[in-house]
Every structure is written in structure tokens, then in C-alpha cells.
Amino acid sequence: MGHLSSFVFNTIEILVYLFIFVAGLAFVTLVTFYIIDRFQTKSTLRRNYPVIARFRYLFEHMGEFFRQYFFAQDREEMPFNRAERSWVYRAAKNVDSTVAFGSSRVLTDPGTVFFVNCPFPTLAEDNVAPEPVTIGPYCKYPYTTASLFNISGMSYGALSIPAVRALSKGAKMAGIWMNTGEGGLSPYHLDGGADIVFQIGTAKFGVRKKEGGFDEEKLKAVAQHPEVKMFEIKLSQGAKPGKGGILPGAKVCKEIAEIRGLTVGQDAISPNRHPEINHVDDLLDMINYIRTTTGKPVGFKAVVGATSFFDNLFAAVNERGRESAPDFMTIDSADGGSGAAPMSLIDNMGLPLKESLPLVVDKLIEYDLRDRIKVCASGKLITPAEATWAFCAGADFVNSARGFMFALGCIQALQCNKNTCPTGITTHNKKLQYGLNPEDKAVRVMQYAQNMQKEICVLAQACGVSTPRQLKRKHARIVQANGKSVSMMELNPEPISNSMKRKKN
Image (cartoon, rainbow, N blue to C red; front, side):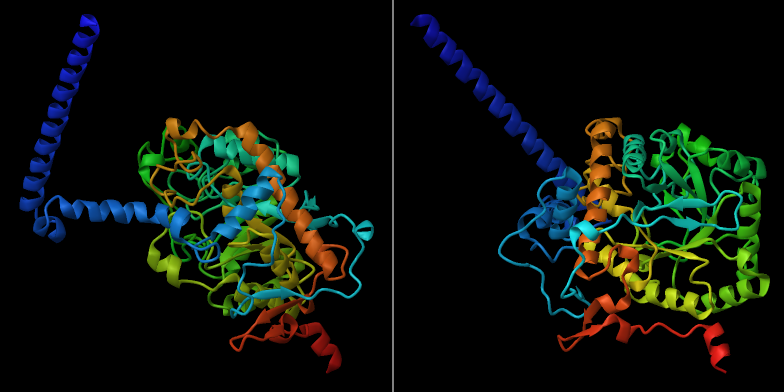
């Protein structure tokens, strides 16, 4: 008993000393913070309310996480709500995606899209696989694919090594393409053997000379990889039309610097446009140069702004000849963007896809180029309904970046530009990357792509067509301000082509 009493007494004594030490340390810390806050001049709140004001900044920082899990309703969060993210997570895990007790979606909000179900929908056994589409018929090496839903541009650098590996392997298993983003071609893009679209940004990372401009030998070297099927010239992207790509120096490690031709730790700030492209003729010249040099299809990516651009471009194509046309166009949305960008551009610049996609398709029809130039729709299309709307509007393909980020495990922590991504997707911190297993996540990427295609096809069957590319604007209705819906065909009637006008005259 004596030994036990002594042990208990000693333990209590140690705990008392420990408590006094911790309390003293806390007191000294508070006094230190008080003095710092009281005499600093940068923050008014901290100067007027020493120590206490620090909790405001803590709560402000933690608020975005608490809102996501405790306070936000399923359909109200931005940029993607819980219902959208949850569907992607279930699709990526290949678990049951059915819900009970009716829709939680508000069905009378202006802009809501309904699909027109057919009284005699296509039977499941009559459904056919998506038809192959050939891009670049005038190229030496045209690209033929039956994919519907592909991985949009995300650079190695913006994404981590395990994330790029998982996307590459998952894309190969799903039979879809992945876009490199403007950061150049890395070994990790090639790891999985997926079809690759090499994006050429305004800084031309991976295919440029140090002094600027194309390095033709590097361009040819990229094209020699059999995985590289197409080249995409990026004019602008959803997050920042009018501004080039941004990769903070904290993410520019030795390997990324070598791939991009930069200095380690140097911010990678791309020009806000290609210096060589001053008008549509310059764009067509660049497309022709890359296509001739590589032998592969070439297109461009842009957010729609000044619509006269397309009139000028398509008129120039018809003057030069159909073979001079871009082989494809990726139309990005003003509400797109997985990367870092100024809020002034994210919130205010460019047209949303709901307006721009039908407009571009109409211009193609008007100038008799609809069958020549393929259209990829990109920007916040992460669920089957959103992708199906794009096919109704006239898209040939749908591309997504953030949908596949969710498939990798993204929790929308909004840390993409800070190298502190908690899921290891957009950080080069090895400790944070540890939890992202490329083999496991590749399966989720595949399953997400497959379930997207499956559900898009289900919606198409309900509309009475066999494949999504047979969908027309008459298959969608859009809710107006009065709460009633109007056919998309009525809102965006397809124009009469110039050749048909000439025949009538």
C-alpha cells in the first residue's frame, strides 16, 4: 500500500507541475501575442482587440470547411454543391447512385434544364455503343475515338505526380483521352498509356525555345509519342480568359522546371495570349504549321467573348478551303476553371457555356463547317444531366477537369493554389501526396468515366434516341423567369446554312 500511495502522490505531483508549466506557457504566449498585436500597425482589429481578434481570422478560415459539412444545404454550395459532389463520389466508387423519396432539386428555378422523355423510349436492348468520331480528316494521322466524356486540361505542376499517374491509368482503362494542360508532356502522362491531347499554352511549355517561339524539334519529338493523338492551342480558359496560366513558384520543383524550361522556384506566369497570334489568319497559320509539322489533328480552346471572332474565323476558313480549318474547338465556360486565377476574371469575364455552346454550333452550321470541325464542351459539366445538355446543344464531346478531381478524392477544400491540398491532388508536399494511391484512384477515374457514359446513354434512351450524339435541341427544355419551360429549339433555333440560303435564292 505504501508503494501505491507513493506512486499516486508522485503522479499527482507531476501532473500539477505539468499543469503549472502549460498554464505558464499559455500565459506567456498570450502576453506575447497581446504585445505584438497592440503595437503592430497592419491590422486595425488586432490593434484594437489584441489576441481576441485573432479568433476572427481562425473562424473565417475554418468557416469554409464548417459550411461544407454542417451548414450548407445539399443544393446551395458553390462552385459545386454537395449533391453534385456526392454523385461523382458514388460514381467513382461504383456504388449505388439511386436516391429515394423524390428530387431535392428546385425544379422551377430559371435556367433549370429538363429533358423531354419520349412516350416510347429506346429499349435497353436496342441501345448501341457511341459511334466512333474521326477528328482531322485532312491530317496524315487522323484520330478516331468513340469516347463521350474525357479529361480536360490539367498540368503536371498544378497536379501532383500520383494524381497525373492515376488520371493516365484511369483514362486508358476507360478508353478516353486526357489533356496535358499547358505544362508540357511529363513521363507521368505517358505512364498509363492513355490517348493524350497535348495542350500548347501561351508560354508554349515543352515545345518552346528559351528565347520564345516554337522549337520545331521539340514539337516533332512530342508528336513521335504514339500516345499523343492531337494538339490543342489554348487561347483562353474558363478560370481566366484574358490571362495566362499561373503556377506558383512553390510548386516549381526541379523536374517541373526542366519540363517547362524554367528556374526552380520561379513563378510560371504565361503571357495573356500567344504573341504570334494577332488575328484569325495568324491562328489559322499556327494551326497549319503545327498540323504540318506533327501530322496530327490540331484545334484550339477558348472562352467565348466577342462573337465576331467566329464570323471572321469561319469566313477565313471558307476563303482558304475546308482543309485549313481547326480540326476541333474546345469551348470553355466562364464558370469553368480548376486553376488559380484573379477573382475579377473568375467572376466577371466571358460567356457561360449555356449561352456560348449553342452560339458556336450555330455559327458552324451557318458557315457550312459543322461536319468539318468537331466541338468539345468544357466547363462545370460533372454530372450526366449537364453533359447530356451539352450533347443536346450540339457538342461532339464533353471534357471535365474538376469532375475527375472529385473522382481522385478532391473534397473542394479550395487549397489548389496554396500547395496545401489535403488530398494530395494539387500539392507537391510528399506527406500530403502519401494518401493518394495511383492504382486505387485510377480505378475510380475509370469507374467515374464509365458511369458518366452509362447515365448519359440512359438519358438519351429516355429521350428516344440510341446514342447521345443523336440528341437534338428539341430534347431539352429550359425553365424561364415565369417558372415555365421553353424548348431549347425555340430559344436557340438552328440557323439556315449559307449554302442553303444560296440555293433558296
